[in-house]
Length: 202
Image (cartoon, rainbow, N blue to C red):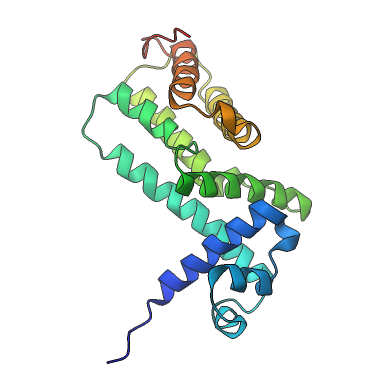
């Protein structure tokens, strides 16, 4: 009996191949031919799923957002103390494994690509921004955010911090160390919240 093809799995493996090409050669290098070779599929098979390079790039970008959102949902469902859960959610936005490294770095490239194309970046479509908003709502719900805080500014500040940490990990991978990232995140949360999240001794 012939093996049934899971079309969504094939599309995702092609998108993952596109991430690798993009990170190695830039978006200009992500031709359908190069991606097909990296994915180990024929050019015809790739064109069956993506008729244009633009369609492939769009799907690859959306897959990054989807994977991030799914990861955040899993962490939010974990049975752990609220403050520890918040720290874990934020840590999971950073490249602590090879799989997450591809996702995190590809997301940053896609974010810059929006400006390159002349489009306006919409943070409301960014799964990282949405995760940050959920974290902030959680802090408010738990009455942890300082009383005089500006919720919008604190959301933007945390969003910028997480993007900065992700970019720094991309540029200086030798400094990508879990405890270092955790201390930076806790230091930030301690500055924004009425209760401490832990110590940040270096």
